Image (cartoon, rainbow, N blue to C red; front, side, top):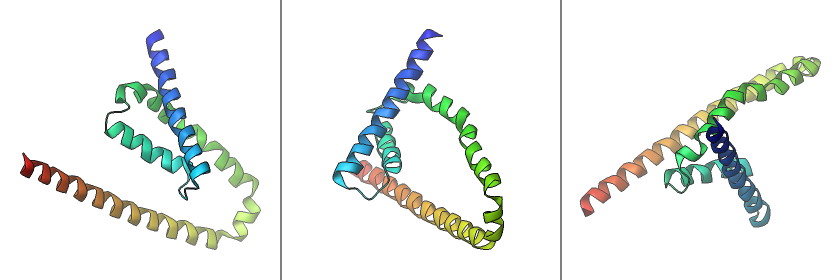
Length: 130
């Protein structure tokens, strides 16, 4: 039990450290990418290349995923608080949501497709070199 708590704390320290360093990178290098997105990208690379072991952050990530629904409570409170404004602008809001969701889906699919092609090409090159 105690070791699991320590693993969870260590995982949070790792996650927060990566995010803090990404905040500094964005701030001082004037990177256009938002710090949380850069943090996710760098965190994924660190996990992929084994610099950060999956076991180190697994418990922390599971805890964050379990608590994620609580993060959406303020959104619903805001919707209720600003119901009149939302009601008056419902059509433009819905159009905006549909367009951005569609673009996000398409861009994500294109990026994932290109990453898969890159990984396959790298694997084929590796097999040819061996």
